[in-house]
Image (tube, rainbow, N blue to C red):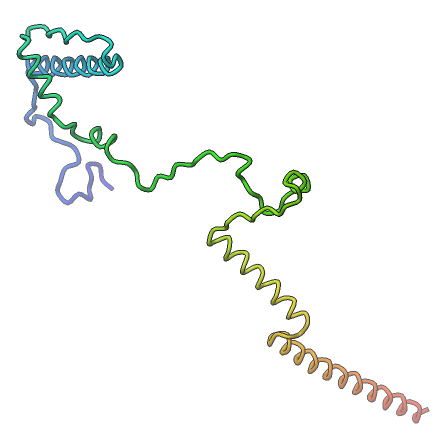
Length: 197
């Protein structure tokens, strides 16, 4: 692939030299920095007021270069403005899928097979089995059915076992016939050899 993004169909990967450049004014940059500082100071003042929670009932000190009327109006406007972006959503929206795990006490827990010590501690009373979820129930059911099928298969009650037994009987019969045939051939050969001598 050639340098410069050959697969871009005529668009350049890099900008050409000598294009128009955009520069910010120094005054504009300083003004933006001042606004950011003011916002941070306001947030710090609000957080310190929240922490104090009425410990100091003195009103806010007016800011540099601002009259008390302007500071009051800016405070009112801060309360009215909703917080934009993700910050505003963080406190308001709760995750509906989040499951809070509650701490369980040891005495409330139940076990499937209680140990002898646990049975003695409960006075020999049976402990109720713990509720199983759907996957666990299905796994236990499948395991139980498989064990039952294997028992029936061993007794020869399943169709598969019966077909296996029939096939084995046919094979056994064929082997017996083949063994008889070999014995007959062997006897015939012996009698033939005996007749030659």
